[in-house]
Image (tube, rainbow, N blue to C red; front, side, top):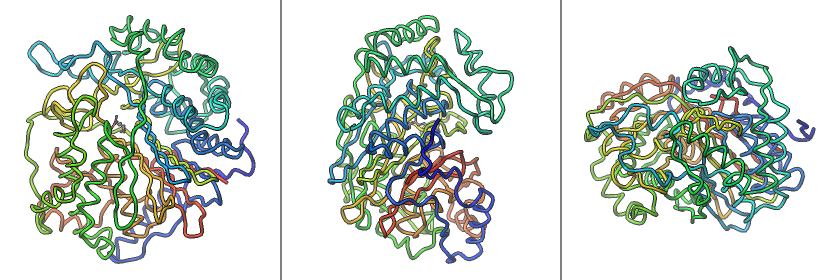
Length: 575
Ligand code: DON
């Protein structure tokens, strides 16, 4: 692939992972100590931050050629579908929040839908008990994909360059191949067993005894599928040969997606949710994502407290954040679902009076107790297999998009002859009241399965505005942790004065009401803070790193700083 020389690509933050953690550790030594000042890539006009250096470079190149942020987003989305197959996709779905330079904003919902033959009890056995794994692996786990319809809709409404130009870099990568990173090689090796188990035809492009860093991987079938989309648009995916390959795949694997389901899929333009936090305007995703509502609820509940005076690592800060997270996630479980099927009380949930009442039970000294509503045990899926990209173009338009197959490599099913993985998004529904999904999230009727319904999401693509201008673009993968990662990054920047890179690198913690404990990355907090949190009654559980936050911050002089998450191969690129 040709990368323009004037495009700067930063595949790693200026500091290495180890030195970043050491640097953060130094902060612990003084709780009111210095704010980390390391910056990510800084550019004058345009920036893309995504999970893969090739995808970021392609987005940047599109803007060099005069494309706007939406053109770049489409090119990045397709590139990720090739070079980041565990989450980038054409067999999944996502959400895009955008803000044009005239101040107008929009939100595109290209979330998957349940097939027409889906039913509320489709993952339960004859005794009404969940069948382990059925909603998570294999053909029945897949919802009707939305990504292609989404990209075409984004292009139709906002694109400026020809669609063929935006998809071509992905076609070239799929045909010619690209080099695997160490992390991707490791992930592919771990996938081999599932590929053998859940595919009806061995997906040769993905299968090998052992993948290594630097191996070239090509996918000729995917390249042909992308060409059909380039040449026939919607009909290149939702009908014709690609649709036939999907339906044949379903028949072989006892799946239920039909020609009708594919024909009927439509993305939806929605009005973004907005709210204010300390004078900043927050623009985020409405239902069927829970992200925007939960984020605005939590920011509102936090606003009365002087987070800026307290330090980021002060036990009061962490306690407050955990408690607002607890409250927002308990609302999520009861009230949120696809608005076309369930009346989501958006206004009520965001009413400042309601949120004030929610915080009446808050005590600075004591953790609340989440009511246990299920005895079921589950293990959290340790995967980061959604992906986010943030883009600002030279005209000042901004895109924040999160796209997913749900779990790592989705359902593990590759559509034979078409070269792409199908999602396992059906697991985001509540298969039975109180039964947790892969992320430990519980739900009830609001998010029950129904034909054609969109499953509730946590994806939180967000744009922050300051004094009428774009200030920050941010989002992350991580299932339920997405919402709290986005929250903590907004607080890092607004309340704690972090640079974008320091903010995405900072260690994170997460509470989601149930299970009732605080999940924490290693070295997230100084021991002294942990002791104080435990004294308040918080149960703390260490967990592996999570989230891949991709952020862009507009600096005071108008330049752009990219923050690419050091937890992955993430990269900023721009000019
Ligand atoms: O839409 C959702 O909330 C999930 N399907 C996102 C999955 C995800 O972030 C995977 N990463 N852990």
